[in-house]
Length: 310
Ligand SMILES: Nc1ncnc2c1ncn2[C@@H]1O[C@H](COP(=O)(O)OP(=O)(O)OP(=O)(O)O)[C@@H](O)[C@H]1O
Ligand SMILES: [Mg+2]
Image 1 (cartoon, helix red, strand yellow):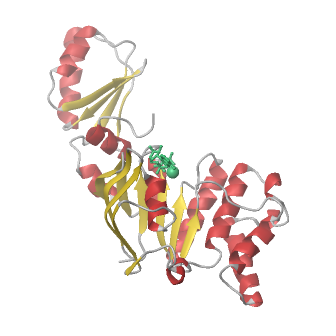
Image 2 (image 1 turned 90 degrees about the horizontal axis):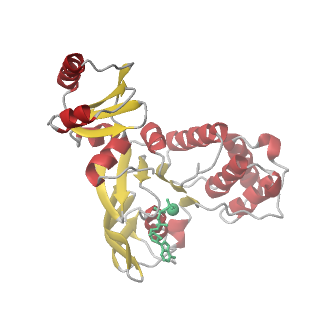
Image 3 (image 1 turned 30 degrees about the vertical axis):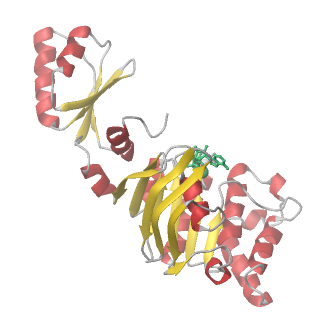
């Protein structure tokens, strides 16, 4: 086990930021820590790194108890913090070289590591730019390069794609996949479920400091009753239809957003056939009909009663 966190409790005054948080991460895993703003993702990471003290529980990294002075463990870890942390007076390349120098003394090795990571995150054309001259997405890529240039075995990335353009986002996700293929274990926090679905092979969903579900994306989707969603284009949402839907035990959730009615159902075919017959007897008009697969947001919605992203 690369990470073993047991019953971690962290309070900020009276606020319970982590409430008996448990986590196990195996070597080579790409773990996604998914949760809305304020759910405790950064707190969990900062406790694991011994950057924050905690009230209860235990944290083991690489099978050893983690502590602020465990420099031998820290050397094996790479951290990409939520806020960009680079020196404004240094160029991109100088920043990366500085961070590399904290771990690697040999000049030739350092040069090679710096060159490799610049290529990995795609900063070749920008190596001589100071951070102020880089776009938000490029700054994030620089932040990542600085955190991983010493080739750590375990990498923590805290929301590395917030507010970046799609091109940088894809480059970031691709770089993480490559690092994982090269052997690094990944801990990735985000509130974007699509990223976790595409990147992570183990997912832990956090809400208000508690793990509410965990597993692969397939396992998580099987935990809820909704099997599929039916989306119907409707000019209006009549009271008689509302009443009809409320009386259907297979329909778990109903959303109407001016044009589209979305139904979360446990039995798609049955729901569809019965609905069409209701439309026909009531002579209700409708437009297109299509189905949607269950997402991690639906998992979150069904377990907590609220959306992952507001
Ligand atoms: N230094 C602090 N002092 C007091 N409360 C804090 C502090 N840091 C975080 N909190 C609170 O603890 C809770 C968890 O915060 P945390 O930053 O870990 O969440 P997060 O999941 O990383 O959120 P985000 O997605 O916004 O980064 C929040 O309610 C937050 O307001
Ligand atoms: Mg955070």
